[in-house]
Length: 144
Image (cartoon, rainbow, N blue to C red; front, side, top):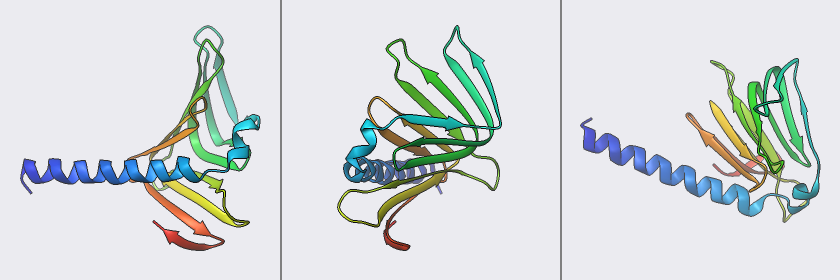
């Protein structure tokens, strides 16, 4: 593969990932935005000066039906109180997310990647490296 082919392939993957992100935001359950965020982990290292928290071991972030899991996460809080989270998977165990979609009783979107970033203020989930997103109707994948 030459460098031009590699760049075109990378651009195609970025476009596909971007389209998947649009579909995640467009179909996420709207009621989740008014729910509180809960975070749990085995260990937490907090730096009050920089407003950074480093979580390790069985990390889980939940906001309404949105559930994100990983082995390690970094959470930053802005001066105006909004949080951003970066969840990192480990070799063989990617970071994951799952969220109910509006439009039906058992509609879901779920994904996994080596790195997942969540922006609470804009309610955006971004997946990076070996990313996979599925839309589900119950247990049946309707789009991937």
